[in-house]
Image 1: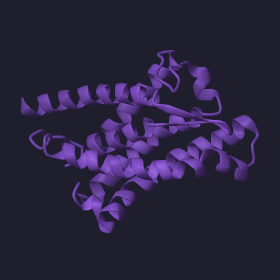
Image 2: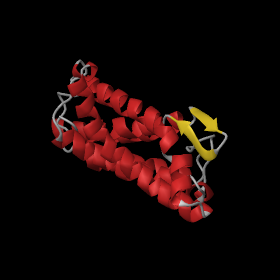
Image 3: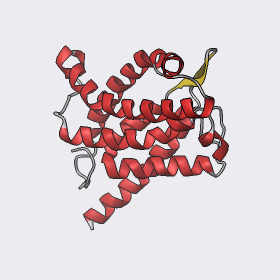
Image 4: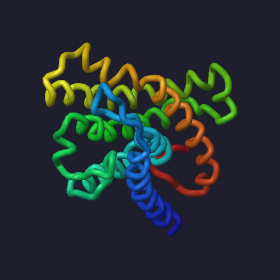
Length: 197
């Protein structure tokens, strides 16, 4: 019975993280030189993978992407529809899926960071070791699709869509690590298969 309750709670969390990603997608700062805005969606994606693990994190992101694809205004600027996914920024949205999966895997395999340890160089390095591969996967998918859909060259795409976002995304990785560690204790009593523990 306890396992069933734990699984149900995990699926409820999947729905919550899908909704949270939609909410944080609206916290955005448009940039004049690129159609890709700064927003907080990636923070939600990283926390989602770190808390739920690879499998459930993937489910949450699939729900988010599918809801947006059918027209629910889940994407940046309260937009939705398949046209957003096929547009210049669509690859970054699709990239949330592998980002959550990789973050979930790294959270399981990498050493625990500890929220207090994040204040030290060692803790920050451990946080980055977990989050950088996840963010890199999102960058890769998003930038490749941006290049294909807009005809922009590689170097110019990096200048428009990757380099300006790196400092903020480093902070998101560190913040996600702190949040995941803070959530670890309240969730300790649940038998989370595939989730961070």
